[in-house]
Image 1 (cartoon, rainbow, N blue to C red):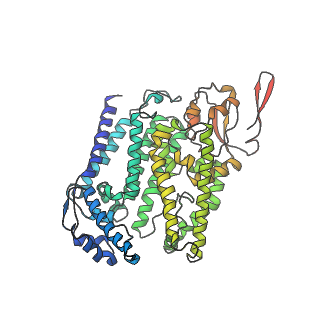
Image 2: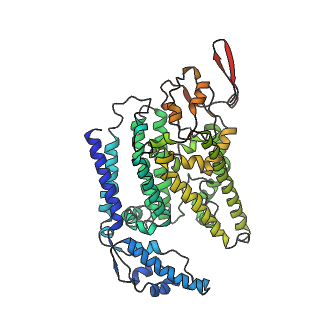
Image 3: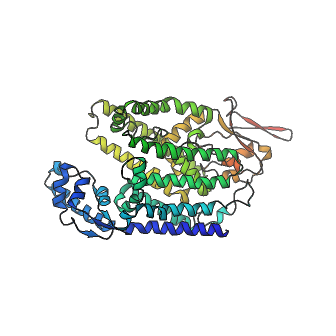
Length: 514
C-alpha cells in the first residue's frame, strides 16, 4: 500500500469515527413553540401537558432526550389503554420530529461544515485509497490474496463491519430518533433538492448513492479494460443517482408524489397501496405516467426485456439493490455459499417471498375495491408486517448487513420477489445464456469462486454446458476472471439453449444432460 492509499485510509477512518461521535454531541431543548411545529392540533394540548417536565429542559444528547420523550408518551398511552379510552391513545410517532426540532448547539448550527468534515472527508479518503489500486496488477485472475484478508474472508474486520452495518440498519428502521444528528447534516442538501428538511430516508438515500458512486470508481479500477464491466457499472451509478435519488426528490419539490420510476412491483411492494394509488391518480399527468408506466413495466416490460436480455438488464444494470451489491459489495462476492443445500434453501425462500408478495398485493387490491370491507382495521397491520419482514429486516438488515458474512447478494438470492419473477422468465422463456468452451477450461475455479449468486460455474465449464439458471444475474464477472476466455454471455436463439451438448473426448461423444 503506497503513501497515498495510507493517507486515504487514514482520512476515511478519522471521518468515520467523527461521524459516529456526532451521535453523542449537541444539545436538545423542547419548547412549546417547537412542539407545536411538529404535532397535530388534535394532539398538541395533550402532549404539552404530558411533556411539561421536559419543556425548556436542556439535554446533553439525543439519547437522554428520546428516552424521556418516549417514557412520557408511553405512560400517557398506557393510562388510556388501561381505562379503555382507545380514541385518546396517540398512535402517531412524534419522537423523530420532536427530537430533530429540539436540536440545538454544535450540530444544528454547523450542518454544512460537519457534513464536509464527515461525509465529504470520508468520500475523499475513500477515493484516495481506491484510485492507486490495481495500477500494477494484470487484468484477469482476481484472487490476489482475498481469501487471507481479515476484511474479506469472515475475519474479525469483516465481522465487525457486518455488525456495524446491521446496527445502522436497526437504528434507521426502528430507532431513527437516535440518528437525528446524522439527519441534520444533510438538511441543506435536502432543502436544495426537495425544498424540505431531511428525513432519515433522505439520509439513507444520500449515503447509499455515495456508496455506489465511490465504490463504482473502485470497479472501474479493478475491471479496467473490460468494456462490459465498465458499462454496467456506469449504468447502475447513473440509475441510482438520477432515477433513485435526484428525480424523486425533484418531484417532491414540484409537489408531486415521491416516485422511483425504475422500482418495479413486486420489489416496490407499496405500489398498489391505497395511499400510493390515490397519490398518483390525483397528481395530474405526471401521476398518471407513474401509474401507467409502473403497470406496463410489470405486464410487458419485465417479460419482454428478460426474454431478450435475461434478468441482467435489471439486476445488474438498473436495480439499486443490485447496484450496491455490485459496487460496495464486490469485495465480498466470493463469500456466497455454493453448496447444494444453499441452492435448495434459495429456491424455496425466494419463490416463497414472491408468492407472499402476490397474495398480499391481491388481498390489498380486493380490499381497496371493497371499501376495506375485507380487512378493515387490519389493512395497515398487514402492510406494516410485510414492510417489517421483507422491506426492513430482509432487504435492509440482512440484505446489506450480511455482505461481509454471506456475500453481497443475500437479498437478491433469497428474498427479492422481483428477482424471482425475472428468474422464472429467464429460466423458461429467454434468449440469454452463458456459453462455455469445455476444451479450454483449466479448472482454476475463479468463475465459481467469484459467482455472487452461488452457482458452481466451473461444473458447467468443465462439461462445455450452457449455463441457464434462474438465479444468474448476468454480472459477467465469471467471464471477466477467467484466464482462458472459456465463458461468454450471449443472447442467442432459444433453440438449443437447454439441449444436450456433446463433449468430444478422443473419438467418443458423451452426451451431458443440462
